[in-house]
Length: 90
Image (cartoon, rainbow, N blue to C red; front, top):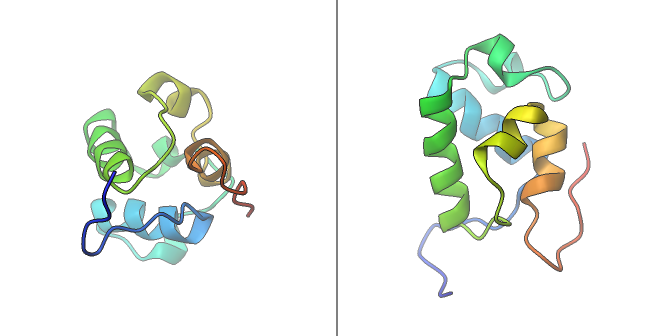
């Protein structure tokens, strides 16, 4: 895999919060780390867009059902950390 300009390989809660907030057109502070993102307006179509973006940036291979079963930013940060990378915390 080659690095692309602007690609980010950090999958911290803060990065995920920013990405979700951007798609929901809300302030990042309005996206809690430990509550379901679905309760705050994220839907499956937007989630697919996020997964595509994150995979392009080097996220671990996870599928939509895995993310849907654990729909908090804290859980996603742990699931998305690339293989061999330290797992991101809250």
